[in-house]
Image (cartoon, rainbow, N blue to C red):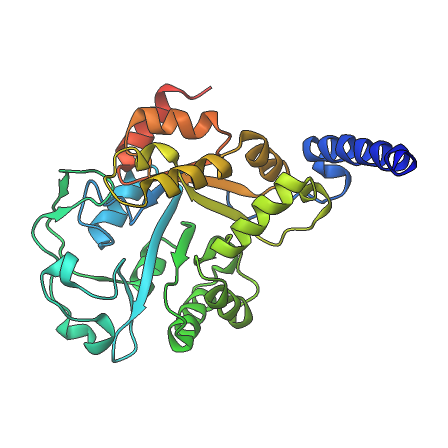
Length: 307
């Protein structure tokens, strides 16, 4: 036993010291990623706190407020149009219990006149524009604006349509695949491997495992973005899984992890930051970007704190 410890303890000590050193100096083993965009101000659902979510009016307002990335979800209508909508079922957004996939584009109902902001209890947004936006219209109006597209269903036709539009508008370098589901992400990447992509849930768990075992500095990473919840927002939720989420966030939200990813050129976006204290907390944790429902809040905060 003593001879075993004689060999194993120095080996563990050397491994630990090497891992810590490489965690802080990842350039020794990894070439820094060079994405075509660097976004510090990201508008969640197009800035749904100031205009009705995911409408052209919301996107226009966000861009006018200086957003550097638009985040949204896409679904496919029955007649093959890629529509921007957070939900596939339209009950929450329109009051009609129908699915986008069951309707033609011309039959989509309008958004409600006032729509509750999911991550701001008691807050509502409104606007003159209540129509669902098409992905191609966003690409056409904002050709140089980076976007993060979350895909929630393993629908090959939808994924292929998104890829075709990305290629048609020549924006593969500034359009990000996003999904929490690894199977869906695999389909996205097989369809178009030229687009940057973010961590899925399973890959995020693997990232944590690598980080806490000290293996992360030695492992190559293909992702260009990590998008994750800020712990603060769960403190405002009253849900049965709150303790689980809080624990998971505490494990995930490690400044040394985020600094390592940033040093490797992987952007870290924390959401949904709808208060100035949230923005400060995210940046203090090492986030490279902040996602909010309120693009004017982001503009004003960064304007005042611009070094």
